[in-house]
Length: 250
Image 1: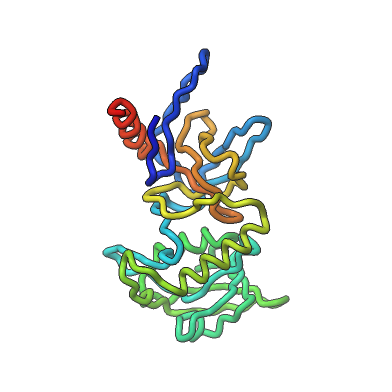
Image 2: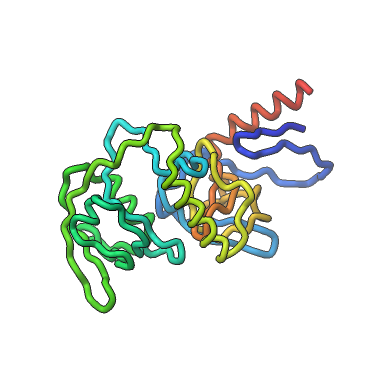
C-alpha cells in the first residue's frame, strides 16, 4: 500500500483474521538489556550493544557530529571475533605512540574488564581528549599495561565521505559475511537499535521483544557478524502514520 524508502519499511494489506495486536513499548531499551526475536520455530536471544543512533552509509562511519570532542585511541579491531583484538593502528595515534601492537587484545580499561568491542567503545565515549587512561593488553602469553593519552579524533566533515572508513567498512562486511548472510541493505538508516542477535536476513521485519513480551523495535537488517539493526518503536509510530496517510492518498 505504501513504502518508506528511508527506513526500508512497507505497509501491506492482507486478509487475515484473529490476530492479536502486539504490545508497543516506546521506551528505548538500555545497553546490555536482553531482547528476543521470535521467528517461526526459531527464537533468537541477544543484548543491546550500544546506544541507539544513526547507521551511516558505507564510508561515513568515522564521522562524528557532536559538541563534545570524541576521544580517540587510533585503532581498528578484527571482525573475526567480538573481542577487542586490534587489527590496525593509525600512524601517530595515541595507540601508536604508546607502543600498542597489531594483534594485541584489550582486556581491561581503567581496571574494568572488557570483553567486547562495543564495551570498549562505551568506555571511550565517557572520556575526553587529553585524558590519560590505563589499558591492560594481552600480548601472546603476556599481559602488558599501557597508559595512552587520548587525543582528539581527526576532523572529518560531518556528512562527507571518508576513504579509510569506506575501505574498513568493506573489509568488515567481507569478514562478517563468513559468519552468515548479511542483508542487502545494512546501512544508511537515520536511527536504529544495535543488538548482537545472529539475525538471518529472512527474519528482518520481525519484532524485537523485551522479556515482558513488549515490542521495542522492528528488525531491519543483519549488518555484520555480531551486529543486527532494529528501528525503535518510538520512530516507528511516525513512519506508520506516514505510510497510512500515503496509502489513503493513493
